[in-house]
Image (tube, rainbow, N blue to C red; front, side, top):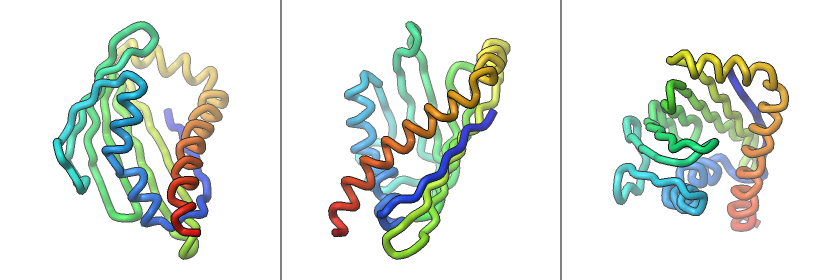
Length: 156
């Protein structure tokens, strides 16, 4: 099953890339939501092969996720592979510079079941795919609005 969204930002591609790869900022956001995260320490620059592990509560159960950067092409592309509870996930983010100050952000997440319970979960998700994709798009756009507000203000 695949979810995707795209939007245009009034921020240069380099700034968008810098914002979405700012691990210190992302870790602070996750910690505020109660996520325990561990990964490479004191990493200023992200690189292919780096792995993060996280623990969080979702629907009354403690979940574990492991995410690895598979491809990192500055400032155009990020591919992250992760696994959580029998679901393999592939997240692809593409940044396309439309001009000096505009960027098209494209994100696709593909979910692949590896267990029977994950397969059943995806089957039930298919029933509400349109609503789930709208929620996915809304969450991504909310995050990007914060990026645009933070980095767009610097460029004005």
